[in-house]
Length: 433
Image (spheres, rainbow, N blue to C red):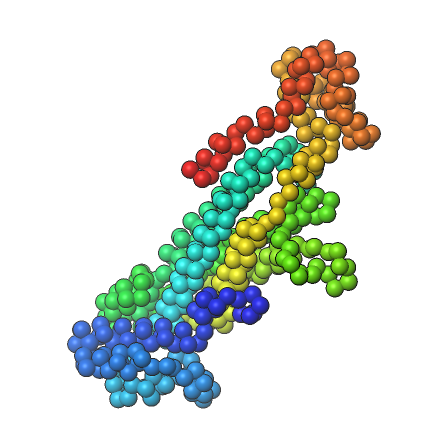
């Protein structure tokens, strides 16, 4: 986790202190159920909770023990025994390390998901507010980065809203898939621990039982989870790139908020750069990069190995912390985005009316002109605008072949800007209800 790109609440999920607290809760809940089953003394379960529940686990001490025993869970259990005393012999009865590690990892991912879902909700609210604000703010739509036909800036934001609403649905599904618990013992057969212990721990930790754990929870679940984070990151980048393009000097239809005292360049005092959205592009690359090793973790040897372990120690915190930061940053960009409707109008008119070429083409075909001929007539006049800077409407009105099919009023009517925005309300109703 890089502090520069971390927010405290998400980062806290992945601290050693948080991890060891979850490990303790898993062990203590298991002890409670084992006591109910009469496998360990009820008094022992009570002592485990009493002494461990209020304990502050000494990370340095656990690290010291691990340096000797070369096993993280054993190091924790040894330290826990130092805290609990003789009753610690009843901790970890019939369990294996993966029961603790895998269940804890899924608890952490589940809690991280809750924060990410809240992040998306905040972003959705910002997008909706700005989309409604600019529902009728007309601007040019572009294909291949070239002027195409008019849209509204609100439609751009409504598209982003719909995309992130899908992201939320995917994340909710990924959260459900990752929220499983395994307390099944060595090779997952429950030979040394009753399945009801797993059910109890799962319920207490807000999880569901893993149907077949083979000692480890199957990593296809994690692959889907991190792939989902990668898709969300790609959606972040899509919107960030749009804003970056709109902030280009030659376009300047919108730009990131430039705060008082902010400086854009160490060399050029005039610069106002899209640094936040450029940063989001970079962060998105990193989150996507974590999806591939998660997929490679699916194939483990036989019932289990630990080739996935080192990967997950990195990608678990890094992917969730980075995405949390990126979603928060994007929300701030949208909330403070500076929009220039006048510049949008100027750009819209930059090509002398060419944005209406399709309407003229369709009108000619409807007037009886063959499509190939209609296309030739419209393109012939359009190229004069491109190459000589002429006015499209004037050229069409002066073209005898065009006038043979269309009256002046017919042609002028095809330059009505409102024609392109007549279904904006329909689209907004589909997106926002």
